[in-house]
Image 1 (cartoon, rainbow, N blue to C red):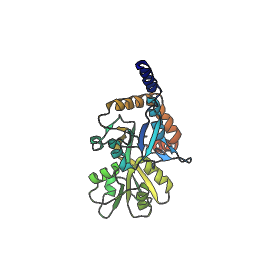
Image 2 (image 1 turned 135 degrees about the horizontal axis):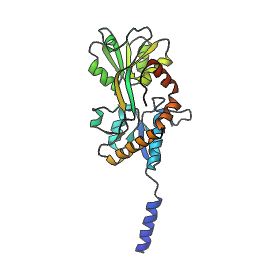
Image 3 (image 1 turned 45 degrees about the horizontal axis):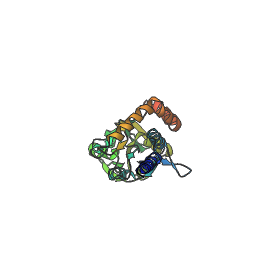
Length: 254
C-alpha cells in the first residue's frame, strides 16, 4: 500500500500542470501594451511576456490592470511580474525589485503646433500650463523641475492630449514614443518636441525578495537580446518610429 501511495504521489507531481506566469500590464499603451482587433492582449510587451513565460516553461496569463494599480497588485501577490513600459526609478525600487533595463527611453513634450518652445525653459514660464499623467515619471519630473508654470495632473493619456489639442495646456510631458504617436494623430494642432528632457530605462518588476525569478528574468532578457528578439520587435512594431527618430537625430529605444 505504501509503495502504491508513493507511486501515485510521484505520478501526481509529474503530471501536474505548470503554474501560470501572471503578468500585469496596463493594456492602454499601443504598440507596447494594447488590445488587438480580436479582443486579446497584443503588442511588444505581450510578446515579451510570452517569450519570458516560454523560457520558464509556464503558461502565460495577462492581467489588465490600471498603471497605478500595478505595483500594489504585485506586492499583494495578484501578479508575478510587471511588464508594462515601466520606468525603473529609485522611488519604485523601494517597493519592487527591477530586472536589468531592457529599453532606454526619454521624456518628451507634446506642444501646440504653433508653439515656438524648444526646451523646458521655454515651457516653464509664468502663465503657461503643463499637463502630466498621474503616476508616471512625467509627473515626477514635472514636480521636480517645473517651478513657474501651472501643473495639471490627469489620470488618462487621452485627457492630457486633449488639453493640448484644445489649447488649454502648453505642453504634455510624457514618453517619447507616445509624444510622437500623439503628434502624428493630431498633426494640425500639435507637434512633438522629441529631444529628451530626461533619459529613462524600462525594466521588468518582480516582488522584492524573489531573487530566483529576478535572476530568471535577467537571463531571459540577455538571451532574448542576443537572439535578436528586440530587433525583431522593433522591426515589427516600430519601423516608422525608428526612421523618424533617426531623421531627427534622436537615439532610438532598443
